[in-house]
Length: 150
Ligand SMILES: [Zn+2]
Ligand SMILES: [Zn+2]
Image (cartoon, rainbow, N blue to C red; front, side, top):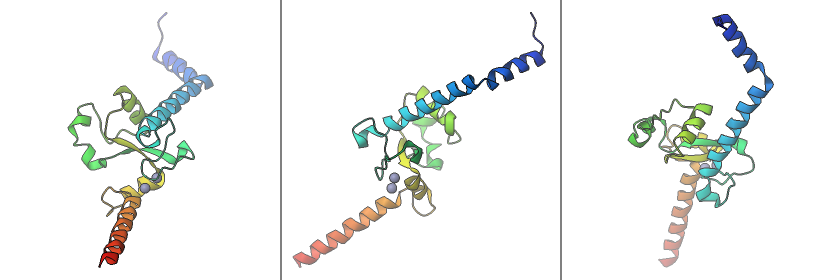
């Protein structure tokens, strides 16, 4: 039987309207996202629990995001990733599919949305404010200690 374009379209739409079709796609997306979050958290959490690689936030995966470590502009010129077809334009499910297809390449980390936004602020030089605060603390302690020696 020959299908007209209209019939083909109607069939495709009917399939997409099917709640199961949507549910399956959603389940695959969520499962893959969880796999990625847990993979890039392992070196910090030493378990399958996903967490922010900066502050350790792990109360809910909704608070976590996949972060390009090098920052948007630099990562597009990282040959190891661009050779695999990476582009910073990859977002959401496209990024998730790409990471899975390319077997979790280096260059990504998990950050909570707070740390991710702080890292991206102009003037923060791709570093979360937590890190700057931590460094200031170390300097203050060093000053204190050198004060005792004098
Ligand atoms: Zn964080
Ligand atoms: Zn942070």
